[in-house]
Length: 470
Image (cartoon, rainbow, N blue to C red; front, side, top):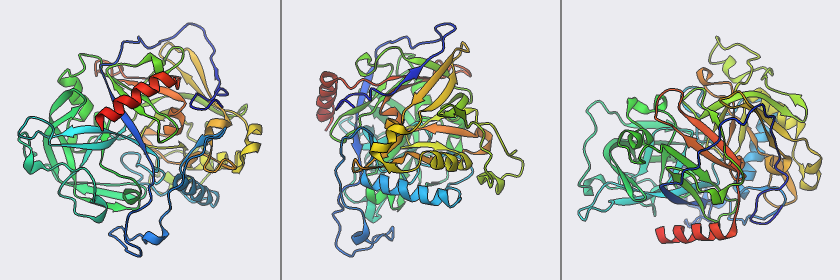
């Protein structure tokens, strides 16, 4: 592995009948630099138990990340991953909400956040700036607010609707929102106000003001909000999502696209680009794939291989949905692949995850070179095959450079949108990924990939931009 570079063993095998669709490479209108956050040493009184019920003495201590030939994760994320593998080996289904959206899981210990402005003060500047996760796996917008008096809300940037001159009350039927995650819960009333990202503003945006944060995840990371970037069918109360307002208000001049560049280490700047891409952050052409069901960012999955053997059927009972949906047929072929920036790892249905953990178990990192590649067989809009090949140096993760675990966990997508596999941030640290809504009509949404390029000069410029935001 080249330090601060791409993993050279990441291979792409492409079978071509024709070129297929590639990105048109129009430059981005604006970028928002992202900062990678991970569990920090808690500045809490010894022995104090705050409202999440966690004993501070037992909370994980800060630990540095170590560059090795394998993908890096934080100590807490690695421990959580190991704990999940222990549960999966015992055959238990992952603890998720079976209806609604894919939850932001208990492995969100290494996230990327960037600033957005909320509301308007009397000098016509944003009333507050909050650092949010730009999440392609959800649609609702959550903002840290002055209404939250929970212990975990201390020392966070907060939006105060009483100080915003552009705030308006939501409709009378707009009930408070409540969402349950793998390890926590958010709740709070709705608001309508302006939202600014970089130099442009979106008006009359409905969002939820965070009033309560319950769960360990909110103690471990400086959580200030979620900006959902999935599709309207996922939105609470049928409110217009942020990016649909972007399109309706023609904020990006018709270039209804956003792209992500993720780095591997906390001290390296990452970014989300609105309105296009920056060619300095990827190699080659961006191959485009149509979204087959606009709820999640889901593209067609033709096959899933470990080595040379197909594992596209999840046929290991009991299935998670055997207990919640008797109409779901067993042995469903997995035909969708979801791209989700709000999930850290690769995911698969419960039965398939158990198989993966048996085939590529935790081992010494030096032994992972013997492990097989994992292949996602895809098809673009011109029906041109594309093999997305992920080597063990990407899907095996390490905290200390000695012991590696497979970065897979079980998530059973709600039956009407699955079964599906999912690619999260570990994948996107090696692949520059773009999300294109087109003109917003049915069939115009695409996802694109290209190998990420970690160019030192471009990254230094990105870091300078990030520091200017700070």
